[in-house]
Image (cartoon, rainbow, N blue to C red; front, top):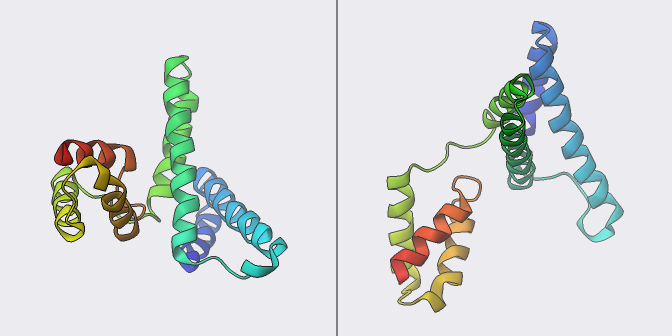
Length: 151
């Protein structure tokens, strides 16, 4: 994933795409910050794997989406549009999210695999889903679906 980001950074530099370039630089800086924090922790030093990079990207995407909502509420559509463009650049590097039907099928499979039968088993179901579909589903929405399926 890092190679794709670096290649996109080179392409954006050559194309002189300012928004894309600044967003990709922010992504690289966030990755480097996380690696520096890991280097300070002697046990877990080294480069980040794709799952950790994906976690950073998901966090950045949520920040952009939150900013868009706040800017739209305050009438700053120009800033909201800029945040939307940045969010689109970040989405390019994330796996395609599950559709509602795919999410329901994944929930049904996880419930069957964990033999969940009540709300007490929700934690096991959610853990299985998070491991299998990390970054591909909205955890809040999924939690609500699991809760209704187990109720």
